[in-house]
Image 1 (cartoon, helix red, strand yellow):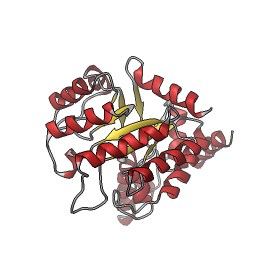
Image 2 (cartoon, rainbow, N blue to C red; image 1 turned 120 degrees about the vertical axis):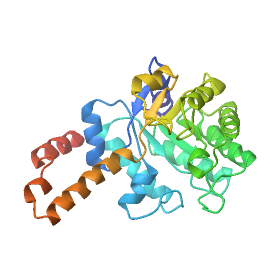
Image 3 (cartoon, rainbow, N blue to C red; image 1 turned 60 degrees about the horizontal axis):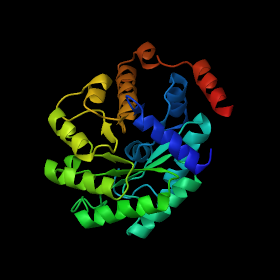
Image 4 (tube, rainbow, N blue to C red; image 1 turned 135 degrees about the vertical axis):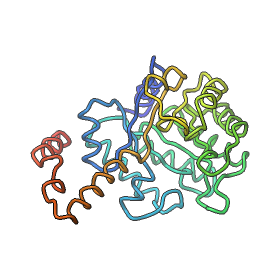
Length: 274
């Protein structure tokens, strides 16, 4: 599907009644499970990719080409629109961000996220003007071929400033971001304030507000148009591995080896080959 058609298709999922749930895969099999379940789009997770490689997220430990290759794999196996969780856009300058967007378009991605993070734990959030310039550059490079999400990480970087978060998201929308996103607003009221401030730009939510996990229906009622899960399906799977490991240490082989049988694995892999 050409970039402009893919863009229109992916945006239509955001703007329809109810929007979409867009879970994040971390490898080929997890992507195939999500596709087989009937999800209409999936995303990468920078945190999950980093963890699978033994690296930390958000510190430029994963390179652009690594992430692009991963995203291409998920798209090839599933045939679904893939949204790339591309940290700060993989570059020091707005021009670098534009180059990342172009590379994502050429890799067949349907969407790309650009955060206002720096990769520097001592100064995790970029200054306002710099953050806006980077989103503006991403939008300029997209040219209606890929859905651009402008994201601020204020809340997950120890900056619980709702006014600044709304200021940033509003500015991202004003320079053309198709979707905006601030992971873990403190509560439903803050979420509604964000949705109202940036309307009609669609808002993505990572699972829920920080204080209470809402249902999909409750988030839709609050005006959310896209729900993603970040690394949380991955960590859910890893919790099962940890539980099985404890059973194994206790000598309980039966509990340690329950799970998906390999006939099901092969069934899913066969889907990916088709």
